[in-house]
Length: 538
Picture 1 (tube, rainbow, N blue to C red):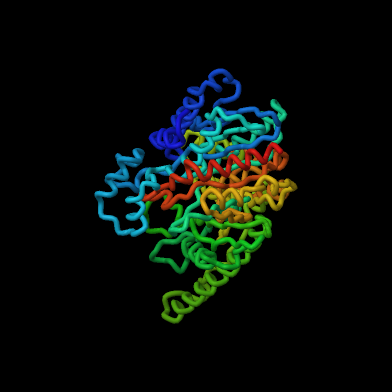
Picture 2: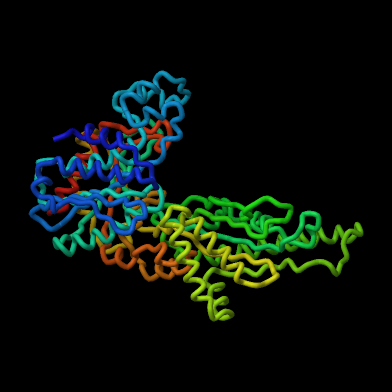
């Protein structure tokens, strides 16, 4: 049997940039490692590459070792990683941990902690080393071990976690099929995501039992087109958008709280005009997308009312400023009072605008379907991303809405991550941690710290769901139809798999200094996972 370190270094050696076909090769490598094992050569029915409608052909790699019990522990992780670009001149060494460390020592390092860790044999460097091929290596080691457990073990490694989590949603159908075929009882999923610690104290092990949710509100403004020499007879869509962004950015009213944890401030991810070329007319269309993390103390659709309120306030400010500026032009004799245009904007949601267009145009349904098919083709070919397709669809909607008034279209774009935690589903997980804290203390003087949510988003969002009806209602407000983007919330709710996120300590993930603490990888985390596996069958 290979050591965990050997497994890890083999995984890291395979570049697997998220959102690329490199992920397919990574999946092949993991599957090859499974098929090199005597058990899976003799029982090939217990492993495979599961593929459902992925445009890049990236499968979910899975392997199962049946135990005496149907109680099943899922060992979950993702095999994609972020790109190598940050390594710069060290790019050639980014997938070779030993050589990278040597080359980094030869460069000027200002970060004191990084410099210290480079001289410490306990830290291993490389892209994906922390996030999260170390976790995948730990999980694989249990499947490649000769040791037998009473619980059934199911290894699952998915693509696309660093992008849209399409792999995690593919896996939902796999869980369902394996459950039906083998009568599995999913007791717990153990996700080996790294625990990022920038401080020196690494004796505390976190066990996270859920994840923040994420929504991406979108605002598209349609102004009144004008030549720049006659700006007072128009309304610039970027002016409208800028005021909305100013009021949305780091707005503390969007913070939500639950179970002793609070979400971060919202921020703007995209802000741009939609002109295809340069000319001396003002941009008629502009768009912005915002990142909002939330917990389930607030329904995701409730944020739409907050966005409408902020948009109304912003448009009132825009109108006031326009009127003040126009009055100045009148006093200067440059404009006539009766030439002032109406800058009051109509604010409408995506679904409301679609309903309005449906009533005005009997051919709208067919036209919409044709548009959706065009977008689907562009996405599947890789020509457009989900975001690009979403913005194109929203602009198309506004062009169908024949009005001379300014318009603000509000709604949501993919992806959607539901907020989830074990505390909200009816599954008892307390007994699974029996003796884990004591083992941590006795083995390496460590402590266990539990939290209800991971303070970010990850694949955990697609393991359980306490409100599929509410989430389905929210999904109906996305810019794209379910046949392009959907979250199978009803299937997830039927599975309702509780989760512990427990992984090795890592630092500077996604950066040049990405590294993992090898004692966690080789000893500490496997020891704790084994204890949970043993508890699962009792």
